[in-house]
Image 1 (cartoon, each protein chain N blue to C red):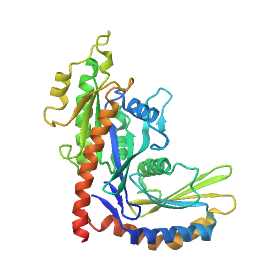
Image 2: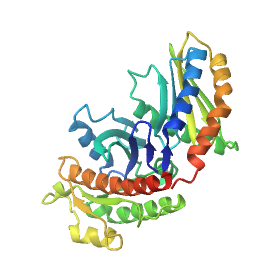
Image 3: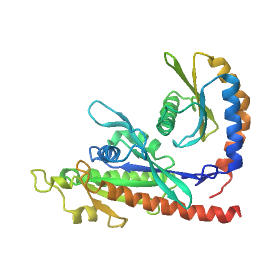
Length: 136
Length: 208
């Protein structure tokens, strides 16, 4: 299967990511495929190797899914890592994609979650179109 | 599963280095990382144990330049070779576009090479991919041990063991010294890009 992302779809995705960044004060948001490829990102990611971050995120999510299965859960759909000043929030967007939100102490996890929930449906629709159109 | 982004004119492909434990998969990536310009590669990420064994994977991204106006970005992964890490190997194989099978030339590793190749075929099949149709290159590593106390297998024996049915491109190599590392990478990249280009042409036709 190929994953083909058209300009229109990327514009819609970017619109959602911008909305999350501007309304939550997160400094960056990334959309990553579960196979480790970066789909889109928005915000200040200049100092981060986002390819490596994408690969590690996918692995992290995959490993956590295995832990969930060991515990009899289908999956853990949210992951949160808290650092001294930087925090990362991972959330599943359907079965193919993970959203990664990087933020510091200027905002709160609650606000981040709220803003992500507000774009979740719209994003999930675009993502399911990208992964489910059968453009093979 | 290549990612074709028509907005950025970019294609992302995933190549996995597969093989038995201690065959030299990580050494291949370390050599590439150490001998590629900073402008064309990202950071090398390794998740390993203290004993130098890969626990999860190694990762390195490379920019291969432009083909048909698309920027080609390749992501190289290794898998842990030990038998009991099969679940991890399956995770890393998710969305794979091409595989380099690294075979250990040491005579004592003969059985493990064969087992690892069978394991690759099985894990690909579970994802609906046939080992016969996916871009694949075999590398016979540790050829630098020829003439030392360590007994290594002749290329003909390795070919018979691993490549008599598949008949894919193969290269003798010494990942430690760099011999054959770029030849292997070049060939698998060529095969993957050719495969992806064919798919782009098909998509282009469908979208018109």
